[in-house]
Image 1 (cartoon, rainbow, N blue to C red):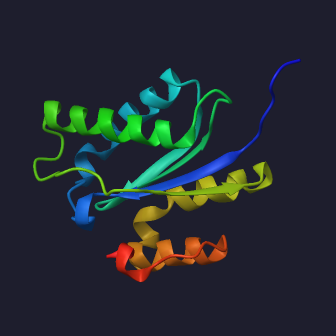
Image 2 (cartoon, helix red, strand yellow):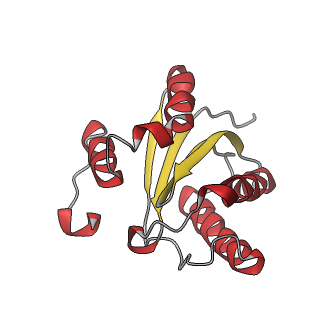
Amino acid sequence: MSTYTQILYQIVFSTKNRVPTLEVENRKELFKYIWGVLQNKKCHLYQIGGVEDHLHIITHLHPSIALADLIKDIKLASTENIKERNLFPKFNGWQNGYGAFTYSIKEKENLIAYVKNQEAHHKIKTFKEEYIELLNEHGIEFEEKYLL
């Protein structure tokens, strides 16, 4: 018997202390690099996007990949790449932790559109407001002090 899964994740994490260091001119390079990490892990990337202080990744994980390990690998590899190539000179790392939210595959197109529209979305709403909405929408209890 083979293993079949269809778990659509929205992964969200920010820069350390939410410092806006991900300048727009090099973001596409970062996104391409993260896409390569996902491909190497046999994960399917549907969309990646973000703004100065955080990223959203819409992906399907290969059944052999643990979510926490994947995010650790993305953060470590992308940090090394950012520093090596000096993509974002003021970048000082990623936040501890992350948000990961599951969706039905039926929500894929809406999620892709949402992530593509991050620039416009964050002219209206802060990352913290967006993140609290996601946590509440998914019934996740949280402590406000960790959302600084």
